[in-house]
Length: 135
Image 1 (cartoon, rainbow, N blue to C red):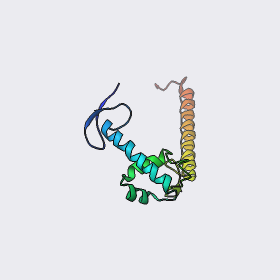
Image 2 (cartoon, one colour):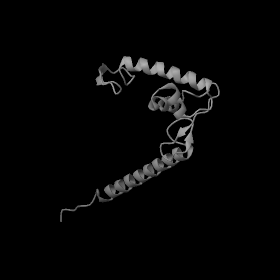
Image 3 (spheres, rainbow, N blue to C red):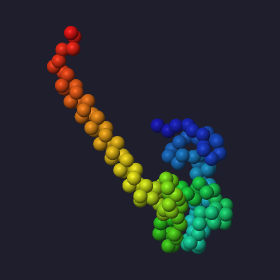
């Protein structure tokens, strides 16, 4: 079911249908993305700062495009931005390979710890199941 929301860009009320902003702001963002795409195609080794300064498009839109892989195979463009965890330069996603692996390792450790705790709890319950503690 669609929800009524306020547009994060302009504040207007709109019906959420998957774009996460009102139709007017979504259309404007698509136009801005096309401007950025054209600039990047013509300037294959540019920085995010240059893109923002030369196109007038907000940095958050350029970063979102990068994180969504919108510039991959865009005329050989090589545009990097910082990993959200360590700051290393990356081409796509939110984290570099090292930080991604670190997050996966941490998740695996937490999962193993959770399973071990659950196993101890089950064995403790099974051990005490037949005992009478009323005395």
